[in-house]
Length: 282
Length: 304
Image (tube, rainbow over all chains, first blue to last red; front, side):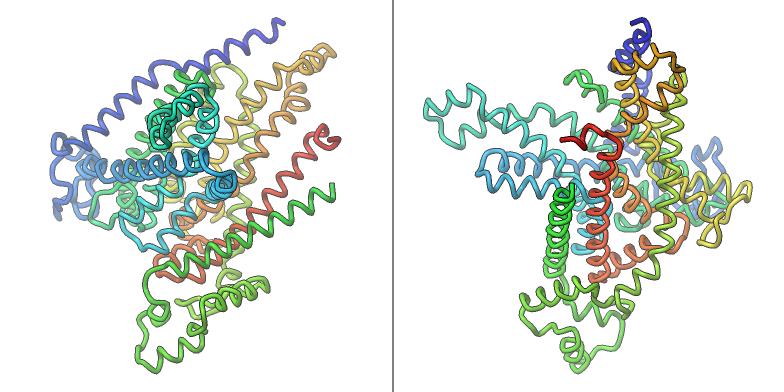
């Protein structure tokens, strides 16, 4: 079986990704979080226009160059972290919260309710994310809040399915049977015995889901359905910069790189944690 | 076999009905007055309002309107666009071709690239480079890929048109943009499948029969690795639809994406609903095709 040997080592290697990417991802996420918490630490006013320095290439004075109004692109990217990431976090919170609630409902109530909810999750999960979000925005109108709710609803089924599956396992567990035998109330059963034991995989899922949410949020605000100019949201900046692409690539490409770096970091760390805590490949 | 297909078609119809109903409920739930949406910026007077209500049958009970809507949808009549004042079927029909062209080109590009990458990058270093590239592609917003390609190949080298849909040259960059993230995901799945297949006893047997490594890979391994990839067909389709909305905007292409986007921004609900129902219909077809593809790829499934 000498043929199979290199394959085995390759597999083991895949289980434990190399360290440098994880370190890099941690640094990028740290920077992003600092930018969210305290943008003025690195950057000046993102709205300060300077008509004398319009569409200038990256230089020592303007690290990422300037845009069509002479605003510093670096300042805008740093301040944009707060907009883009908070949309992603809020959407993920909605997805996780509603997912836990609906998953518990499906796992604990009647079989008929479970069937209806599960089919609902299937249908939601099967439908293109962007289209679902567009449908919701068409009904609720454009704007940051409806963007957040739209992404939250569109990404909810994944969490709900995992919680439902965990619930079905946990409700059979001996400690739950014992609690029932001891006469624990329904509320106590759910809150003290079931809920804490179904939440295990959620933090890691939420982290990977956050990357996805940031990505979709950037896409939808690129389409003009999120925060409106002049707010320095990454997707909206790309969309503004698209019109000047022939003379100033930096005004659109560099904010896009900020999205990519953030999402890659979240994915790398999320997958790493998933491998460590669940011993599962991918 | 025929029974299975019939069952599939039946559940497909149920899914379609559910999608149409959900879409209709969404229309009812939408805030704002339908009459206002239809009038838009046009002339407004009580007479015009009364005329619109009569013309669109808005004075009938909701249940009657719903049944009427289902009946017309079953006949292929998807209503009239509020904004464009044209039948939705014509609006969509006009714009379907460019989007289908884009989606097909992107799918072919993505799938072929993924197959080549999964087969070629077997060595340790090639695999590492390719995995990194896949991670980057999957995590990059599609519009950024498009903008980078545009600025390099259209603006710097002038090789492709900047926008529009004239000729095949205009299709290249959008298709590549849409296909790259798809290739990223598919390559990962195919590679995992190949790894698993080549650990199986039949791979050892094939090697023992004296087959070259490449032929073991292509003739035996690939077929097995296709199974998990086929289950991604539904996802692939969703990625194509969702992606084309964004890609068409980046490249200024006409198409369904532009129509959808205008309808969403203008609350043109009949068009939005038609797109949703159409996507659901296409989705049912794709998933049925995926189930049939399983039977073609895996003879073991045909027997049971």
